[in-house]
Amino acid sequence: MRIENTPVPGLLVVHLDVHGDSRGWFKESWQRERMTAAGLPDFGPVQQNVSYNGLAGTLRGIHAEPWDKFVSVAAGRAFGAWVDLREGDSFGTTFWTVLDTATAVFVPRGVANSYQVLEDGTAYSYLVNDHWSADATYVNVSALDPALGIPWPLPVAEMSDKDRGHPVLAEVRPMAPRRTVVVGAGGQLGRALQRVLPDAEFHDFPEVDLARPETLDSIDWSGVGTVINAAAYTNVDGAETPEGRRLAWAVNVTGVAALARIAIARGLTLVNVSSDYVFDGTAEEHEVDEPVSPLGVYGQTKAATEAVTSVVPRHYLVRTSWVVGEGANFVDTMRRLAREGVSPDVVDDQFGRLTPASVLAEGIVELLRSGAPYGVHHVTGRGPVESWADIARRVFAEEGRDPADVTGVSTEQYLAGRGDRPTAPRPRHSALRLP
Image 1: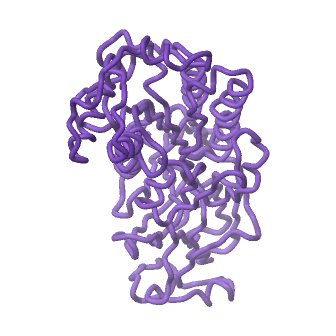
Image 2: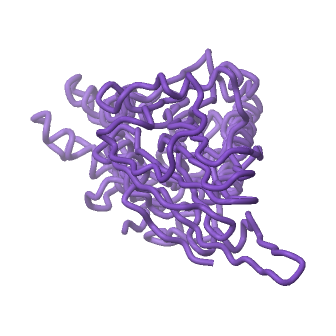
């Protein structure tokens, strides 16, 4: 078996092994393990269709469907022609070839396909990765548009009136890419993602609440390609209370498990965000493949969400640390204290890197756009490793205050000042190794 690229991005010609003898022939039209190993996308087919044409010269198309398809010939031969109708630089790119029992083709979503049968009694089978729906949106182009230059080998014997009525390429509105859905639009990361993904679809609490996974059913998942989970329970001290513990597990684990099931069922890419709190902080800088060892409940839920995310075939697990963005955060608190004339005690024995929410959002978008390998990635700010007290002193200096007005204290001293309020153990070292 051999896979051949074409001028149309993602359109692949597959040369199959056909085994024949005096009785006839046999081939594997679809063999997931071998074909994906050879370079075919693991596109997750859910439906098989068969098309039969009795008369040579019959022409079908040209249609661009909102799903991927794998086409192989069961009997006879067909001349196949494809036109890229997706948004982007490749719009209008064409390719054609002859399909027979030894030649199949993988057609990505948005690439229009058309087939003219070359022999009477030609039948071809196609696998698709979404169920057919009468409401599905197609993009079509006229198979006879001279601008396409398709050299149909036979006079047209049969062609439907509907296919004859398709627009010429110059009048076609390109097919938009699959939608990106963001859950947790109102948080620091969600707000940053709104700026870098203006065309995404955003959902927020209480419309979509991961503590109530049934609310995910309010999202129209058809046509979605990627779901980014920017929602999380992040109150690390609150997670140490009975109520907070239940809510942390509900949002960070049970809700993410529901997202994972949707992603698996629909072949989506799932982006989920984890934390430096999955580590115990004994290493000064944490590697991507370091075994997790959380200290508190919040870290335990994040370690669990990493395990849940890992079962999704297409997933990015993005670990980050010390996120600051729009909304209440450490830097804003220090800025306010500086302006109010307060001289605070700030922990000076926890070390990490500050991560602007904008940097985290841009890092997620870059992973998606670059086609980075699925799995765990560290995305944080690239500044120096500092203590919380170091950061506070820097903020004070920016506000015109003496950095010495910030007093460094140990974690134990700081927590002792909280009285009987529940407190979570913190990792001493939170810096994540960056590529």
